[in-house]
Length: 343
Image 1 (cartoon, rainbow, N blue to C red):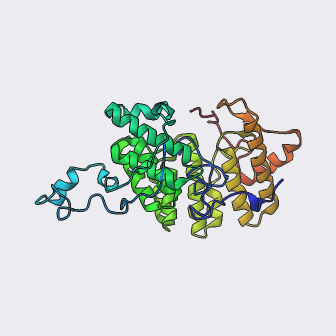
Image 2: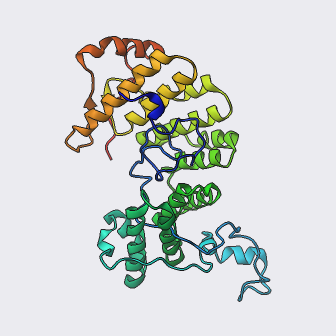
Image 3: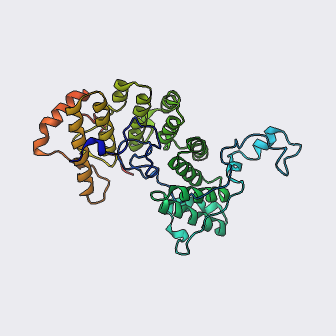
């Protein structure tokens, strides 16, 4: 087994340190190198060399420098742009899209959101978003340029603003990511990107605000996978503040079940192991690293279904007992409500 130092980004690392993608593997937390979940995966595409000044406040009064706004009050200007779309409508050169990339390449659920657009515009946006999905892992800069192009054409579509936020996060523009995530949240009414919002606050050097944001929504109201990612992000914020014991406590959630593997289990096990290591509990940390590896192997050997996978091995009983004692769950880390979530 590889040394723990080879295990991707630690939960306490600032977001964007070694940026490989914008969401999931190398396991270890929602920041930079954390494993990606479906909700984080852009529906479609891109970044390149955007010339737009995306850092400007979309709600500022531009009556002096924008045609058509002369004589309007700041309130009137704001009312004309309730979703902040002007922030992505400045000059921008659209990156090229290969002819082989077609609108049908975009996820069906995302395409459904584009039905409010004209067919020509919807097809163009879909192709840009498809390019994001193709490029986000290998060329996040170009992926971001495609996301900007999509947002210029469909700035009031939730999946478009979500995609722009994710690509901004992937290139380390945490201010833009946070702003776009707030817009996505306002348009969609969803809190599923709360962990990424918390991590963006961390990236801006504001761990206190990250913790406040993470506590602003009842944890039980979130999907299980989002609860896990939020716990990892909150743990990272605690580490940013030097609160290592509190960081471990953030991870002691019902989903920290050493006997079963869900899609989010390896990231949670890794985060828990990393904090144990920071506390000097090397042996216990190694047990959780091994659980993470076993979970990854079990998930990789699965049939692709979302059902929970048992990962207990015959020689694993002592490790489980030690884990039960360490997290104080009395042998039932998942508790009474242990039904696995399905997407």
